[in-house]
Image (cartoon, rainbow, N blue to C red; front, side, top):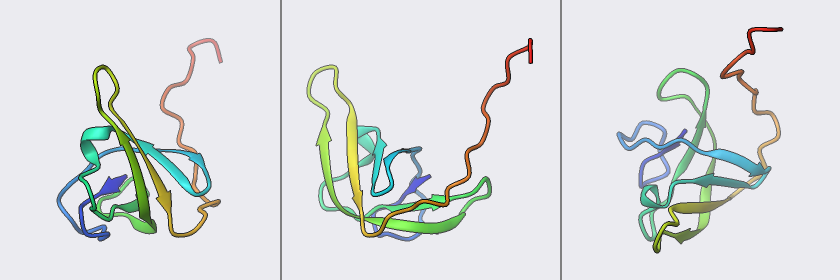
Length: 90
């Protein structure tokens, strides 16, 4: 989860994100307000455990683009991988 504008897992804002590197999370561009510190929170329960927070962002939401890259204050390497779908033939 990518939460809030103040780096707190208790905040009400919520977007999803995906680790593309231990120190980089990709989220939707409209989720990254300029200058806002985002908390990266893990777990299936809300508010979840704070794993890291953003120290800088790059956002591109021009035209058909709508993504944001969040550079984190520390690497996160112990994130569980949750299955979202299981094929019927397994």
